[in-house]
Structure formats: structure tokens, C-alpha cells
Length: 445
Image 1 (spheres, rainbow, N blue to C red):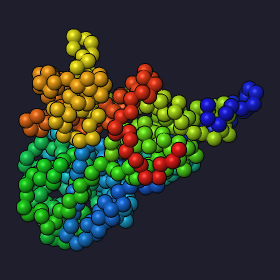
Image 2 (image 1 turned 180 degrees about the horizontal axis):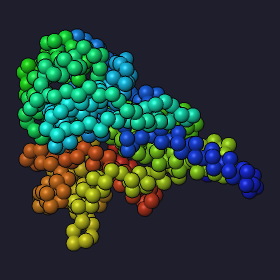
Image 3 (image 1 turned 60 degrees about the horizontal axis):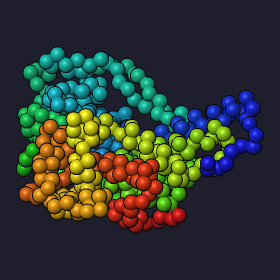
């Protein structure tokens, strides 16, 4: 084990000290690696330098507001959560609303106004008069939650919340309104009303700014087509992170935890992640926690994430991945209560490709990587059709004739992680996956 073990057995006092050291390490680990919640401390935010600079420039430009969009899992909410810090605004004047399918313009902005201390009387929407906020930083930097009672100004808004009401109440405040998961909003009138509102705020030169966040490939996909927003709403698309940016996540964690990821291990973790910080945080967290168990034996141990810790962390990461991924994968491959080899091989072959849109002939060639002989492409057309269907969880999408991709982009790194686990535990690293061979800047053994 890394760091070796303490000489002899630990006494009672030493065991208590070791336990305390270990628990402190776990707490710091949960700060550095956050796969389940957004980053909320600026010191652990990695990469996105150009995007942060652009965000600051646009928010601080008169009449400009910002929309952040991109694939799931690329870190949009983490950037949004810390936007107040990057654009140098008061956290207490930042109003964060998370949308749902049922959200409407009025429910969203009733919540915004409540956050700003204004209670509107509108269609039964009420405020509880309490809000959660960060009070301060504890001994290890953990966020402390408080509940504070506000003094509310009560306003009769009439049948709906209007742009004039919002400009009157918010326009001259130096506030930041963040509307997250906006892609979930299904009410088309909300999109139109929000577009009109942003234009009103822009034309009025309001100091209060909007930040819209959601899953989308284009701005039009996120908010609809509104020509009037071309001047007032800046577009920031977050693509997948580069290897260098993903490495920064590991390096920040190493410094904070005083643990070392061996160069080859860091490279493998980054290549598995496929550009998604979620997987670096997920696998990194479990691997680092596994390495930390050595502190129970020797609280002064030098912690290292090597092969054993990486393998254990990978297994735990797969077991603790967001439930939609294993659920969809199992639905895709299970036939009459057993995994189907053909369905499994097709998904593995899709994940083996470096291209996100994969041609059928390349799927066949990649299947041959696992079986030793590539099948004829026509031999699994029916299976591909099934994997596109709702019956198989719509795990694949048909892009055009003869081309397919994973419907959920996070599925490819999830399947690659399954392949890596199989390779480690059952094949003794006999497979050399092409996606693992890509070089990483700064990798050392």
C-alpha cells in the first residue's frame, strides 16, 4: 500500500488521531472532487479561462446579458454558480433560480423577486420568507448554511408579472439573475416573455443582468428564435474540456489533499473522461478516498493514487454514477433477463470510436477488436434499430443513413469506464484501447 504502514499496532489515542486525520481528509476530498454537486468555491474551479474572461466582459458591458449553453456534464452550472465571483458582484445580490418542466415566466420571476425581498401577490404564488445562503467558511473551508428572515415588501402584481414591474423593482440594482436549467421550460409563452424582458432591460440600460443556463447545441435551441436578442444577449457555448483543463482539476485536488496521482493514472483517468469534468470528479473522488484509507493505519503516510487505488476508484465510480446512465445501459443490453452479447458489443464498439458520429462499417470493425473477427455490417442492422427505439431506452440516435451516435453524450465515457474495468479485472490489461493512447501534456510516470 502507498506510504507503507505504521510500525506496530496503533494505540487507542493514535487510533483516534488517525481517525480524525482520515475524516478531515475525506472532508477535503469532498471539496476538491464534486461529481454530485456544482463547484461552489472559486479555488476549486479549473479551466475555462477564456470563457470566464468573456463572461466578465459581457456582463459588465452596458446592455448585454449572457446565455451559457452546451452538452450535459460540461460544467455549466459550476460556472454559473461562481459567476458572481468572476464578474465581481455581491453574492447576496445574486439570485439563482432552477427551472423545471412546470416553470413559467411568473413562477420564475416570483422566485427572483422573493430572493430580492419583494413578495408579489400573483395566482397564489407565495414566499416563505426564508432563504438559504452561505454564512462563512469553516476550519476546512466548508460552506456553512444559514436561514435568514427577510423583511418583504408586498406588491399586488395583478394578473401577471410585467417587464415594467421588474424594471421598477430590479433595473437599477447591481444584481445578477441566474436562471439555470432553462432548457427544461416547456411553456412557449415563457420563452417569448423572457426574450422581451431581456430586450427591455437592455434598452433601459439596466444594471441588473441576466444569465441564462441550459443544455443546448445552439442559442435558438435554448430560448427559441428571437431576432430582437441578437444585440442584447451574448452567447457562451461550453464545449468539452481539454486534457490540460481536466488535468488542472487533478492538480488542484493533489495540492489540497496532499495526495499524488501517478502520471500514467492521471492520463488514463483524463482519457476515460472524454472531455467531461463530471467523470474526472467522479473517478478521482473515489480513487482519492480509497488512497486515504491508508491514513487509518499511518496518519503520516504519503498518499498515492496508483494502480490499486485507481482500479478500486473506477469500480466505485461506476457503481455510483448518476442513475440514468446504468439504468439506460442495462435497458439497452438486457434481453430475456440476461445481457445480450451483440447489444453489448455494439455499445462497446460505439464507445471505442474517437468519432462521436460513427458509421456502421466502423462499428463492425470495432466489434472485431473485441471478438477477433469483424462481422458484416448488415448482420446487426436490426440491433442498431432496436438501440434507437424506446424499448432499448433510446440509447443511440440515428444521425443519418448508416451513421449513429449516443443520445446522451455522457454514455460514451460511462461505457468506456465499463470497458476499462473489464480490462483491469478480467483481462489483465490485455486490451489497448485506442482512446487511451492519446498523449496528455505534462504526463509523467
